[in-house]
Length: 70
Image 1 (spheres, helix red, strand yellow):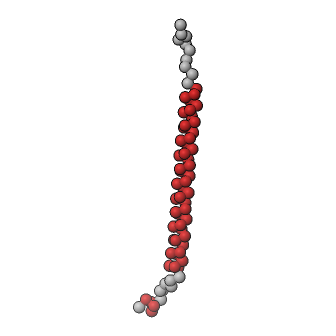
Image 2 (cartoon, one colour):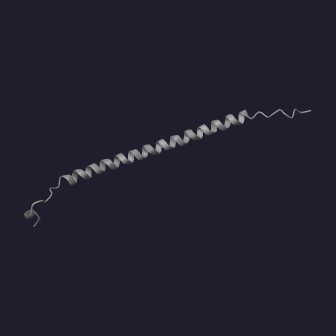
């Protein structure tokens, strides 16, 4: 006769589930950090081009005298 109070051992399934969850969390973290680095690199590139644009515009002399405007 089987013991009706004996429970099946599910610890292996629990450990496997935790391991898979940890791998998914690590993969998501890796992809998030990689995406942030790509965004940061693109922002640095845009910042360099913006500085070049501002330098070119700053060299232009503004006309402030009335005789120069006419």
